[in-house]
Length: 178
Image (cartoon, rainbow, N blue to C red; front, side, top):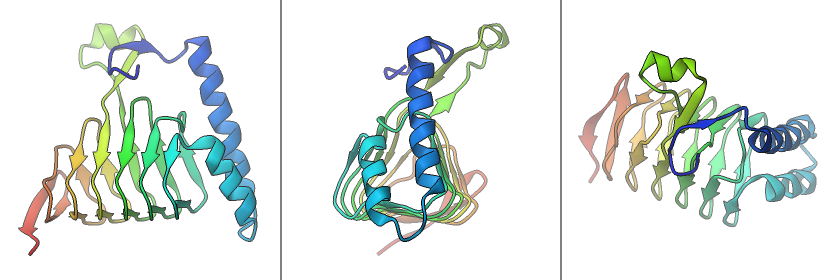
């Protein structure tokens, strides 16, 4: 799974690990806004690697949690979804708007293979100082370069270079940043 090869999501070990992540995200999502220590404790157990000043505003959903890594000063606004069947990496000083979804999970194109219930994934990499606008979708295998901005509502299907503003469906470079 982590290598991006085909796997069965119904594997008992994977099902147990997803259940553990669901239990932790439920605790996070059910916590009160003033329970910051509880939330930090849950995130410590859920997220694979996180730097200082890492924060997620509930509700939040993920598949495993341990495949998510983030640098310092990373903020996720409400209702973020990360399907982390492969690594999903965030640099430092990343801002993620509400309702943003990261889909590292994917399914085979061939209908017969897909019908066998095999799945796969491709890593997502977000650089430093990136801002992703609300309701954007980041597709499997995408990298977003340092200092780039993704406009709200974008569907990012291909890599985005550093130092650009991009938007749309599919997301395209609008202009280069100085």
